[in-house]
Image (cartoon, rainbow, N blue to C red; front, side, top):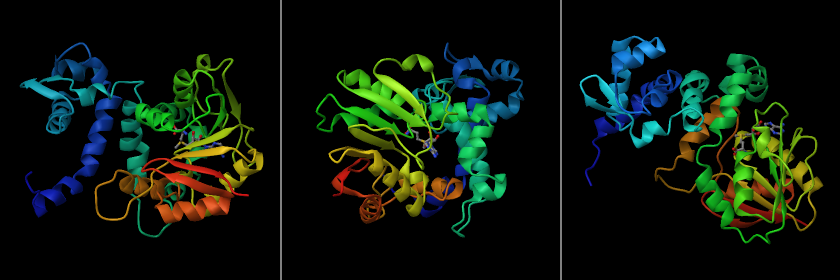
Length: 318
Ligand SMILES: C[S@@+](CC[C@H](N)C(=O)[O-])C[C@H]1O[C@@H](n2cnc3c(N)ncnc32)[C@H](O)[C@@H]1O
């Protein structure tokens, strides 16, 4: 395996914002969808999206150098597996637009003061801002769906009884729980989130319901509670208060499943080490290591029973 030199290593990091923004431009202009039927000249893509052909070619050429799009002939671009994932509605396209838009602007103001940049810039917290921007709320709810296959695999590895009612606390538009219930036909589900989430109501029915509310006030009663990328959004004190709300509603034998990262020690690459900084910029949230998770669970009234790399199981502490 070839060693990356010191200068190349720095260059690959320093240019990161350009890649982030380029992905957003391509997704915003609908290029991945336009190429779904086959390669097209950039002049046609530019005409369809009212973009400048030269600027768009340069954006696509840079992305193609990383395997997102491919330039088949000069000025003729096609999709790759990676750019195909960016098609609208897939979750990745919406994720790219958020990352290269409102999040990139926020990250530009990230500093080491420990205070989140978002409220400083927008005068409100991220969730209230989303409530005021329904298009971004819808984009966010779709974006959270990316990576759901791996998350369902993790959930399936748990020794379920098979007839539980699962409450997905902060379950967004409900897509994760809806998919999970397909492979667990004896279970029922409750998606609990802020009322303004943008949902496809057709996924709700006999076995799955949506309950609107705030997890700082109350959550529904169930046999198991799922917290999927929720606690990393909040500082320790606030995260503990979410756990305490669940603890107050949970029967003593309830199971708590947390889908969040457990940051390992050492210098190995691990995506959540970067996501941690987005949490810091947006929300004053954080990714946690095992010791931090143990302390948080204890403060919230739970005891851990299993730590995976991206899944924690816990039970009510007596
Ligand atoms: C990072 S998203 C995770 C969504 C979903 N669990 C997933 O993993 O796809 C965090 C979720 O917490 C919800 N949320 C934020 N504040 C909340 C509150 N006070 N009560 C209930 N849900 C809240 C947001 O609306 C959002 O859907």
